[in-house]
Length: 286
Image (cartoon, rainbow, N blue to C red; front, side, top):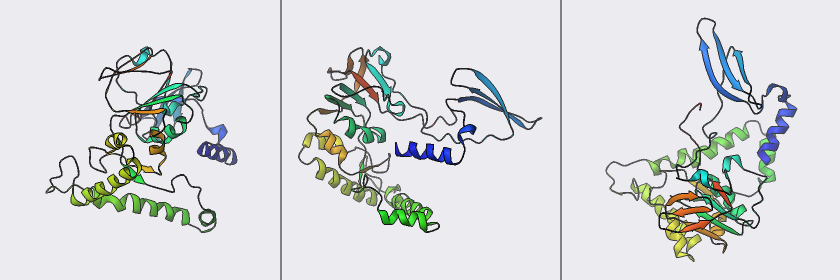
């Protein structure tokens, strides 16, 4: 909501709305060497196909823009309401519903703590747990003093962004680099990575120590840094411990009209099915 409001405000203040073709998909872009022009085929919101000639084409589609759905048998058979988290159905009220969520990555991490308070029963299907990085201030408001610095000190916001990258990304590089002489199996890739794993495991033990069942499911079986790590301020553990929430780690066999059947022979009934299964990140310019 905050980001969408910012985009709308900026589009209005910069006079960009008349230059934006909303609900329009680029189907193809071909370059004519002779004419030195691009021919871009687009499909508008009404389905009409249009040809646009341009001197230059700038792609800014990013990687996380095409939802990825799992290849689970029977997905089309589900009789209830279903959607991908990137195409959220705000018209569906989850209050009092039996909701099933497939996936425990970054997307689920953001919305599960919220919908857990709405649903009568929430079942979360997990294939691999994420490593959680302690971030106690993750949801805290930006301090007034810091906002003042962003607005009044030239270059400060850019420096702050660089500092965040330097400390949390580049600064962690030595802890995730592979040591070819290290024999850590699936646990770790170096001595530094193993120490990192121990510290992150302690963070999980502090949160799930009172729930051994959840702790066993929360500790990843791969080295830290092998997959995206998530900033954590405790809301995920709090959500999983709710009496109306169940974390299912057994594989999914199929989806049917009334819910999800697991490989272990269980059947979980659901009114709403939410796919938190990420994006087709490798399909560039899809």
